[in-house]
Image (cartoon, rainbow, N blue to C red; front, side, top):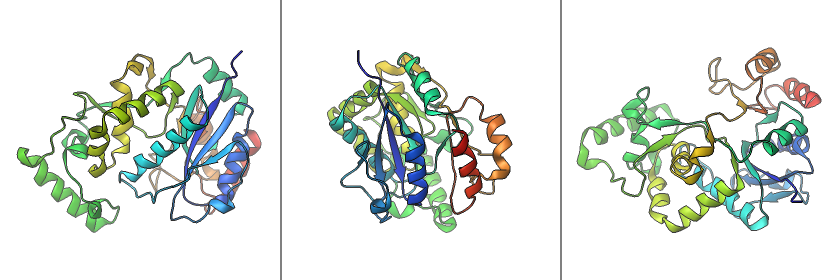
Length: 291
């Protein structure tokens, strides 16, 4: 009988001690880990090396909002394909923590019958500027991809000019007619991951268009999955708890004072983010004792 196997894609850039705690907490007979450690972080040598932990050999410097966020995931996917076949692939960050025992996670996905857990909305989305279509319709030079307030104001003006003038917008012929966006943290079947790699390999223009997108990682994978044969199996949830409401940072860095909220609003969730050892170690220790 085939053994049930899961792969964790872990995207990380800081706090190797915290990453080690995460890897230890998720260690299980069903699990292997595939890490992309930001090329500029210099922390890979401080992360535990075990037979079940695999590192991307040529990591990239990951920049928020840039194609490099997509590239880091694709590198992990390709490493997974080279290594073995897995029933499920979970995307998490180095600042995630499990909220339930590994047994609970494994039993749930064993019984999931091939469902794809992908949080998504269809575009255009009326709640966002230009229906969120600007993310792929506008060509963004790399210097405009930044959280700096001055750059953000400049980027918004640039976006509005391009979106108001049809001939300035990019042609989206390489994309399906129906576009989707959502959380870049998801749990998908190994077969779905394989499909995406095959599609990208056979349709290089799809990947090329996203190289100058803005926050394209929230559109790239969702659009592929929701236009694939796997769309019928998609469940619009991801079993992850994140606090986008409380602040002061978004998402909130969770602290011990958030414990009750995590347990109440995160009921039914398997992982939570984000946590930071430098901000509040107590909540990390508390949750790891329970997981």
